[in-house]
Image (cartoon, rainbow, N blue to C red; front, side, top):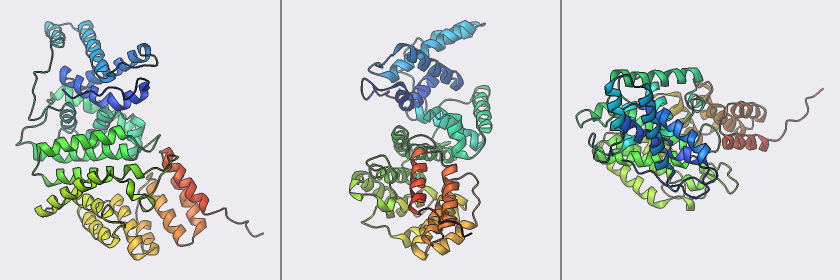
Amino acid sequence: MVELRPASSPTMDLTSVYRAEYGRCVATVARVLGDIGLAEEAVQDAFAVATERWGDEPPENPGAWIVTTARRRAIDRLRRESTREDRHAQALVLHRPDEDEEVGPVRDDQLRLIFTCCHPALSPLAQTALTLRLLGGLEVPEIARAYLVPEATISQRIVRAKKKIRDAGIPYRVPGEAELPDRLPPVLTVLYLVFNEGYTATAGPLLRTDLSAEAVRLARALADLMPDEPEVLGLLALLLLTEARRPARVGPSGELVTLAEQDRTLWDRALIAEGHELVRRCLRRGRPGPYQLQAAIGAVHTDGAATDWPQVLALYDQLLALVPTPVVALNRAVALAEVHGPAIALAAVEELDLPGYHLLPATRADLLARLGRADEARAAYDEAVALAGNDTERAFLQDRRARLGDPGPTPG
């Protein structure tokens, strides 16, 4: 059973508990019930009960309280809705302690949940949307913004995915060793997206450290499960090297601090050393994949007092050849600007089509500003601000626009 953490302080508010414990609670209850949809409903019911009973002080271990309450609510519901003896038997089973249950090669409820949600019977969008909803507790609007698709699309995919898991009897387990390689790619994608949502939330505050920490923990568990899989090691290295920079990512007032402006003395050197060692292990294998290349880029950023931009650009060239997407091309353009100047980078950016993605006009605005094209930069910043969902990023973009000054009066 995954360990549910106690509240960090006796006055931790229910919203913080929800964000910190929701995924763990759903994963644990899902293992007990064998039904993801029922588990999610039971956990949501338990949080509703908590709003009435906790008051200003949650219990010492709020996660355990939620799991216990969710199980009881599920038992009550099964009994109410039971019309056959097997339903009664299922409800009685829920009373038994589950610590002796062992499913699959590892004991980690959330890893089992990820593999269940990432079953090949589900579409890629359904896999990631369902996992972000269940593991991270993200709401449908947040997931929709992350994917740049309508909320109705995400909602429908999640409902259909849970129904398919139930109707098809998809097992709640980590696959056997023979199945793992084929089941791995969507799991890596989901962990990457969960971490990113924690590192740059689609809405609200910039950071959700609970999500980032959970993604790192699960990536470690996956690396223990598959220590010879280079892309698993690459993902773990990427997450560690990115997480190492988090302490310097926001300023004293919570403002966003860019990589170039960060105080590198605040970076976590232990995580950087671990990430670099993992990158070296990957390089020795000589089979670079997308996560390994991104980790190598992270290693260059965290190696020394300044970034070796030509090396970063060379790595992005390799990454773009493997993953020729507009997002990778946009990130490559940032490196291109540092090596060959903003004019060449702007020409590359102008060819990209990323509707609804605020970082495209934000990057374009920065390049235009560096070229002295202030009016065009202001318009691009306005577009980026309108698209940004995160409060901190929006404030950062507004500040950058303000630094350009106001345009002069139009000649009469």
